[in-house]
Amino acid sequence: MDQHIKDVLKNYVDNSKIKKGYYSNKIKAYWYESMGESITSRTTDLYLRGTTLHVLVSSAPLKNELFNHRDKIMSRINEYLNEEIVQEVLIK
Image (cartoon, rainbow, N blue to C red; front, side, top):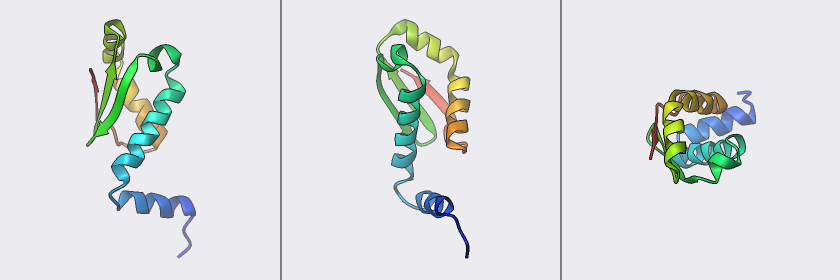
C-alpha cells in the first residue's frame, strides 16, 4: 500500500463531513487570489451549497458582468480544484 500523502488526504476529505467546508475554503481562496481588487472588494459573500456556488456582490454592473461569465467562472474553479465540484454559479 504505497500511497502519496496527497492521495491519502484526498481520500479522507472525500469520505468525511469536512468535504463541503474544504472545497468552500479552497474556492474562496482562489476567488480572492485570482479575481482582482475591483471584484473582490465588491464581493460580499461567497459560499458553496451542494454543487452550486453562490456569489453575492454589491454592485449591479458587476453582477451583470459576472452573470455573463458564469460558465467561465465555473470552469476555472473546477480546473483549479482538479475536480468537477461546481456545476452551477448563482450571482446575487
